[in-house]
Amino acid sequence: MPELPEVETVRRGIAPYLTGRIVTQVVVRQPRLRWPVPEELAVQLPGQMILRVERRAKYLLLHTDAGTAILHLGMTGRLRILPDHTPLQKHDHVDLVFANSHCLRFNDSRRFGALLWTSEPPERHPLLQTLGPEPFDAAFSSTYLHQQAQGRRSAVKTLVMDNHIVVGVGNIYANESLFAARISPLRPAGQVTLAEYARLTAAIREILSAAIQQGGTTLRDFIGGDGEPGYFQQSLRVYDRYSLPCTACGEPIQRCRIGQRATYYCPRCQR
Image (cartoon, rainbow, N blue to C red; front, side):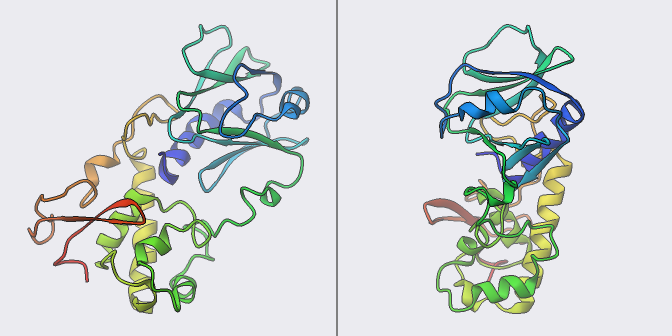
């Protein structure tokens, strides 16, 4: 599933083509996505100008004066900017058509993505209102993470992957951040010290920033907003490197499962 850097890469790719453009039509060919595409989207969005394109966690927000379209890529969702007469491909489910005769086309083979609409402030939407801070916000700090961890016996990896605690630290980047911070993903969250959380918050920001700069991670169906795959996979130091030597000490990378997710770590470097 695309994680925060992939979604941010898509946002940066499509924003220049959408911002300031007027939507003339919404074409819904398949309304049955993860949640049904609401009928009011095709009624209220046409005639509106896209004021800005933002990201909240893994959601893309297309803001207009009338409301906000909320888009989630799911596991296999793709967005392309195309001339509106471009022949359809299989799984092309929705077009947002603009006055310049181009469209934003949403393709999703597994239909786990979503396209929703709200006329309320988007932060009040049920999908967004309980989310934790963004990893680049000042509210996400070592003190905050240490406080959230108090009394928790679950693994620290589970803590940083909890979107109610902090958004966007998916499985790949949790593995990489814990390695960079030299913290075992198996450690109970409540036993990690404030100094260690300082290393971890810094590592999360550094890893995510590097991934955004490199266009995300190439996994299965992900393609960036410019149609190009991401390249951060070349920089992975532990994820998907089971039994290979640690890049820091040479110890074989170990693998286990935490919360049903594959977890990779170096037993020597991470304590």
